[in-house]
Length: 212
Image 1 (spheres, rainbow, N blue to C red):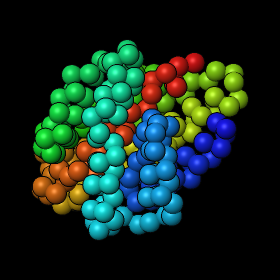
Image 2 (cartoon, one colour; image 1 turned 180 degrees about the vertical axis):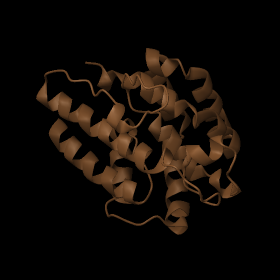
Image 3 (cartoon, rainbow, N blue to C red; image 1 turned 90 degrees about the vertical axis):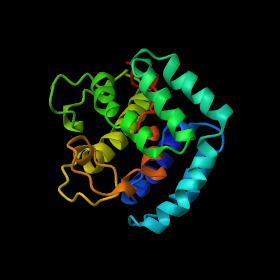
Image 4 (tube, rainbow, N blue to C red; image 1 turned 60 degrees about the vertical axis):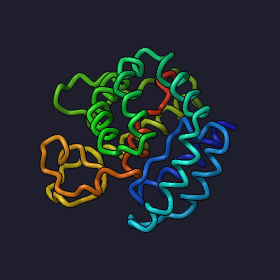
């Protein structure tokens, strides 16, 4: 059962990455999340604003239901030491997201990702949090270790290939921590529903999964 889930997640995650999206492994395990992501990213597509405008509202409606989101907040953040250390930022960004204040949401969440990954994967470098610097925990259980590697690899590929990638074009819409934090962003469409969703998904990997 778990190996089938991993196979499915690897496929849909690869297709989502090709479209410059990220699939939340936590939501892929809850309710109808798997069905939604499987349908949306059943095929590999190239990044396109029309695709984003179609997908974003659908995912927003399914992932931002109050009861579901409250459970995600409790199980993935409030009860986990590493995630809870960013609880103020996450809750503040979440409230902004509900208010459709994308600028405030992104401003709260985008700088948290690096520190979160540094703690999850015991990165010792103070200046580099690329996937190659992560220490991927192992448990000795073949299936669980495969799951850990699968989720870490999906996260690492998105961060290295998109969000942490150095970018010189100030007019892009896709997530770029580099442009935003250096004050070089010149496209207000960057503050979008899609980018808020992706940041939320990036923050959702359950810390318990990565505990050896």
